[in-house]
Amino acid sequence: MINNNKAIFFDRDGTLIDIPKYKGFKPQSFQKLCQIYIKKDVVEVCAMLKKKYLLFLITNQPDVSRKLNSKINVENINSYLKRKLLLDKVAVCYSDDDKNFFRKPNPGMIIELKNKFKLDLKKSFVVGDRWRDINAGYNSNCKTILIDNNYNEKINRKPDFTVKKFKQILKYIDI
Ligand SMILES: [Mg+2]
Image: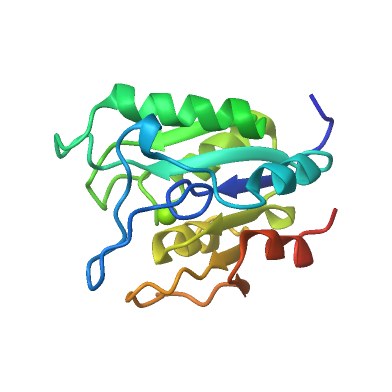
Protein backbone atom coordinates (compact mmCIF):
# COMPACT_ATOMS: atom_id res chain seq x y z
CA MET A 1 0.00 0.00 0.00
CA ILE A 2 1.22 3.48 -0.74
CA ASN A 3 2.28 5.51 2.22
CA ASN A 4 0.17 8.63 2.14
CA ASN A 5 -2.81 10.29 3.70
CA LYS A 6 -4.54 11.89 0.74
CA ALA A 7 -7.61 10.34 -0.79
CA ILE A 8 -10.06 10.62 -3.60
CA PHE A 9 -13.61 9.62 -2.81
CA PHE A 10 -15.49 8.69 -5.95
CA ASP A 11 -19.22 8.48 -6.32
CA ARG A 12 -20.27 5.46 -8.39
CA ASP A 13 -23.31 5.95 -10.64
CA GLY A 14 -22.86 8.65 -13.27
CA THR A 15 -19.29 9.26 -12.07
CA LEU A 16 -17.33 6.02 -12.62
CA ILE A 17 -20.02 4.19 -14.56
CA ASP A 18 -22.65 5.26 -17.05
CA ILE A 19 -26.25 5.55 -15.96
CA PRO A 20 -29.45 5.22 -17.97
CA LYS A 21 -30.79 8.67 -18.68
CA TYR A 22 -34.49 9.35 -18.80
CA LYS A 23 -35.49 12.78 -19.95
CA GLY A 24 -37.13 14.84 -17.23
CA PHE A 25 -36.54 12.20 -14.57
CA LYS A 26 -33.93 12.11 -11.86
CA PRO A 27 -30.72 10.19 -12.65
CA GLN A 28 -31.29 6.46 -12.21
CA SER A 29 -28.84 3.63 -11.59
CA PHE A 30 -28.31 0.30 -13.28
CA GLN A 31 -29.02 -2.70 -11.11
CA LYS A 32 -26.84 -5.49 -12.44
CA LEU A 33 -23.19 -5.97 -13.29
CA CYS A 34 -24.03 -7.08 -16.85
CA GLN A 35 -25.67 -3.68 -17.50
CA ILE A 36 -22.82 -1.41 -16.54
CA TYR A 37 -20.02 0.29 -18.44
CA ILE A 38 -17.06 2.02 -16.89
CA LYS A 39 -16.94 5.53 -18.33
CA LYS A 40 -14.32 6.63 -20.81
CA ASP A 41 -10.81 7.28 -19.38
CA VAL A 42 -11.77 6.18 -15.85
CA VAL A 43 -9.42 3.17 -15.74
CA GLU A 44 -6.45 5.20 -16.97
CA VAL A 45 -7.13 8.21 -14.75
CA CYS A 46 -7.53 6.05 -11.64
CA ALA A 47 -4.24 4.31 -12.40
CA MET A 48 -2.52 7.72 -12.52
CA LEU A 49 -4.16 9.01 -9.34
CA LYS A 50 -3.34 5.79 -7.52
CA LYS A 51 0.33 6.80 -7.44
CA LYS A 52 -0.38 9.68 -5.03
CA TYR A 53 -3.79 9.03 -3.52
CA LEU A 54 -5.79 6.34 -1.81
CA LEU A 55 -8.88 5.68 -3.92
CA PHE A 56 -12.29 5.05 -2.38
CA LEU A 57 -15.78 4.45 -3.65
CA ILE A 58 -18.58 6.02 -1.61
CA THR A 59 -22.02 5.16 -2.88
CA ASN A 60 -25.63 5.59 -1.77
CA GLN A 61 -27.69 2.57 -2.82
CA PRO A 62 -31.12 3.30 -1.32
CA ASP A 63 -32.87 0.97 -3.80
CA VAL A 64 -31.82 -1.88 -1.52
CA SER A 65 -33.82 -0.59 1.45
CA ARG A 66 -36.63 0.32 -0.97
CA LYS A 67 -36.63 -3.35 -2.07
CA LEU A 68 -35.99 -2.35 -5.69
CA ASN A 69 -32.57 -3.98 -5.91
CA SER A 70 -30.64 -6.62 -4.00
CA LYS A 71 -27.50 -6.24 -1.93
CA ILE A 72 -25.80 -8.94 -3.97
CA ASN A 73 -26.35 -6.99 -7.21
CA VAL A 74 -24.86 -3.88 -5.64
CA GLU A 75 -21.93 -5.82 -4.21
CA ASN A 76 -21.21 -7.48 -7.57
CA ILE A 77 -20.89 -4.11 -9.28
CA ASN A 78 -18.83 -2.70 -6.42
CA SER A 79 -16.33 -5.54 -6.30
CA TYR A 80 -15.94 -5.42 -10.07
CA LEU A 81 -15.08 -1.72 -9.84
CA LYS A 82 -12.77 -2.27 -6.87
CA ARG A 83 -10.83 -4.83 -8.90
CA LYS A 84 -10.76 -2.92 -12.20
CA LEU A 85 -9.90 0.46 -10.71
CA LEU A 86 -7.64 -0.82 -7.88
CA LEU A 87 -9.74 0.93 -5.26
CA ASP A 88 -8.51 0.73 -1.69
CA LYS A 89 -11.95 0.37 -0.15
CA VAL A 90 -15.63 0.56 -1.00
CA ALA A 91 -18.20 2.15 1.31
CA VAL A 92 -21.93 1.71 0.67
CA CYS A 93 -24.96 3.22 2.35
CA TYR A 94 -28.16 1.27 1.73
CA SER A 95 -30.40 3.59 3.73
CA ASP A 96 -32.90 5.95 2.10
CA ASP A 97 -33.22 8.00 5.28
CA ASP A 98 -31.67 11.44 4.83
CA LYS A 99 -31.06 11.61 8.56
CA ASN A 100 -28.72 8.61 8.32
CA PHE A 101 -25.16 9.87 9.01
CA PHE A 102 -23.73 7.56 6.34
CA ARG A 103 -26.07 8.60 3.54
CA LYS A 104 -24.67 11.38 1.36
CA PRO A 105 -24.96 14.42 1.70
CA ASN A 106 -24.02 13.43 5.25
CA PRO A 107 -20.31 12.79 5.73
CA GLY A 108 -20.43 9.41 7.57
CA MET A 109 -18.78 7.25 4.91
CA ILE A 110 -15.97 9.78 4.45
CA ILE A 111 -15.41 10.27 8.18
CA GLU A 112 -15.25 6.54 8.78
CA LEU A 113 -12.61 6.11 6.05
CA LYS A 114 -10.73 9.13 7.36
CA ASN A 115 -10.46 7.52 10.80
CA LYS A 116 -9.54 4.13 9.44
CA PHE A 117 -6.86 5.35 7.01
CA LYS A 118 -5.74 8.47 8.98
CA LEU A 119 -6.54 10.75 6.08
CA ASP A 120 -5.99 14.46 5.74
CA LEU A 121 -9.33 15.54 4.29
CA LYS A 122 -8.11 19.03 3.40
CA LYS A 123 -5.82 17.38 0.85
CA SER A 124 -8.55 15.00 -0.34
CA PHE A 125 -11.20 15.25 -3.02
CA VAL A 126 -14.77 14.13 -3.53
CA VAL A 127 -15.71 13.53 -7.17
CA GLY A 128 -19.38 13.10 -8.01
CA ASP A 129 -22.23 13.96 -10.34
CA ARG A 130 -24.92 15.11 -7.92
CA TRP A 131 -25.54 17.66 -5.19
CA ARG A 132 -25.40 14.89 -2.56
CA ASP A 133 -21.76 14.18 -3.44
CA ILE A 134 -20.77 17.82 -3.41
CA ASN A 135 -22.45 18.43 -0.07
CA ALA A 136 -20.88 15.31 1.44
CA GLY A 137 -17.49 16.71 0.40
CA TYR A 138 -18.36 20.13 1.77
CA ASN A 139 -19.59 18.60 5.04
CA SER A 140 -16.28 16.80 5.53
CA ASN A 141 -13.92 19.59 4.41
CA CYS A 142 -12.77 17.87 1.23
CA LYS A 143 -12.30 19.64 -2.05
CA THR A 144 -15.15 18.90 -4.44
CA ILE A 145 -15.32 18.25 -8.16
CA LEU A 146 -18.66 18.00 -9.94
CA ILE A 147 -18.92 15.85 -13.05
CA ASP A 148 -21.58 17.84 -14.88
CA ASN A 149 -23.82 15.36 -16.70
CA ASN A 150 -26.43 18.01 -17.56
CA TYR A 151 -29.08 16.81 -15.14
CA ASN A 152 -32.19 18.80 -14.61
CA GLU A 153 -31.28 19.19 -10.96
CA LYS A 154 -30.22 22.11 -8.81
CA ILE A 155 -26.83 22.01 -7.14
CA ASN A 156 -27.16 22.96 -3.50
CA ARG A 157 -23.57 24.05 -2.81
CA LYS A 158 -21.10 25.33 -5.33
CA PRO A 159 -18.41 22.73 -6.04
CA ASP A 160 -14.77 23.85 -6.00
CA PHE A 161 -14.43 22.68 -9.60
CA THR A 162 -16.79 21.53 -12.34
CA VAL A 163 -15.84 19.37 -15.32
CA LYS A 164 -17.73 17.88 -18.25
CA LYS A 165 -15.45 14.91 -18.87
CA PHE A 166 -13.99 12.56 -16.30
CA LYS A 167 -10.37 12.96 -17.40
CA GLN A 168 -10.59 16.72 -16.80
CA ILE A 169 -10.41 16.07 -13.04
CA LEU A 170 -6.66 15.74 -13.59
CA LYS A 171 -6.52 19.50 -14.17
CA TYR A 172 -7.47 20.08 -10.54
CA ILE A 173 -5.92 17.18 -8.69
CA ASP A 174 -2.24 17.43 -7.97
CA ILE A 175 -0.40 14.37 -9.19
MG1 LIG B 1 -23.93 9.61 -8.94
